[in-house]
Length: 540
Image (cartoon, rainbow, N blue to C red):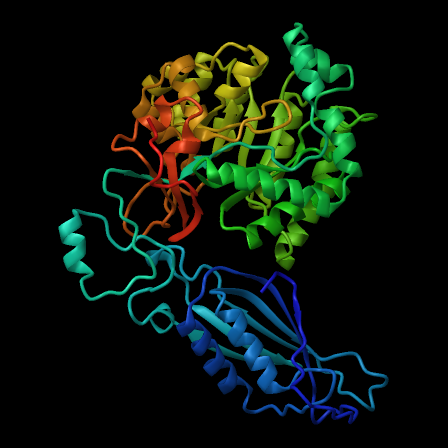
């Protein structure tokens, strides 16, 4: 069932036209934020509990609204989708209060995170509201998964093949993949992307090759401002369509969790449009997404940095908080482009602190083109991660290491803009948590984390082991998700990449060779990509 789909629950042949009255309220139903894989036991449980909760209230067949049985059937269908975030039943508006009771009825079946991790599964509350009466039913994880959290998409066991076979000798599986001669790796995590935009900038590539700098193009009205103009004009549907295809290409290259930023709107209307597109992909696509509000990606034309910061703090962030509370948009991180000629250190501090105050993780651009002391600021504010860092100071590296603030390095950007490489080796030696990202955007058009790892090894002198860790567990850490993603461990989400090679290093060694190497990409235990020529061609 798609997010926001309205189910017409009329039973076949039913034609009753009696007007509703206060003694027999009628309802129509709308499912919001329904996603995930099937779990029949959960469906039956929610159906049974809903039936128990509703016995004291009368339902009546009144066309064109669904009957009680149709509503229960709707719940069963939605719950079978595994994560029913909210099911709302509303009493419809009637012609007069004499014809229809005024009490609003809402049913909220909050089944959030069932379960992301065995050790953190919350108890679930099923509530039925009628006027000022509330019935709460507590549902424990054991009731939802009596056989040990079946169907949750998490890894059940890791070990030697014979031990695993014995442990699950009596179990049945939907699918078994023979990985003989192959390697199984954690799903790759792309810790920095700008994937929602309209209008490419291929014409600027020739300008860069001719020697134009990033800021020269930016100040001439190109760069971010060019993309902003086209993104503002694009419809939400157009943006979603291109975003979906970009995510699919990232997934085929092995990415199973991607950080996705807004930032090509710069006004509230377009920033929210981009965030809605990201939220829609979260709900409808089999790929992990960490969403980032990046309204401070550039200073809008006609404003100063201070004026832009004031607008973000006074208008954008309060609206994000409101939408988060209503469940419409869930943003994870806040980003600012802290750079000379963009947002200075003071404006950056104000915006990041305001974002942190509403519960967003700090994850921002810093020390890319000029030394700005962004690393020191991020460490002071408790930032989760800072990206770029080509111009980071020695003091900044030390501060990040002490604060356990991740450095998200972007070798594609340094390569495309001919910048000096980030000091990956010094950061690693100082104890900084080094992660990698593709920085996919119109200025650095790269979907492939295997290629990013290759560039990190060649240009930033990282070892292949370091690059793999930076593109999995460390990148997950940079997004605040290392407890659920980034490694193959019991209880973590079952995100995997299976490559057609007996040595995992081929994923990095073969520059651009991932299309022949990657046989399967798996997200939450579900095969989301299978190479059509899997097993029929050599990867060498």
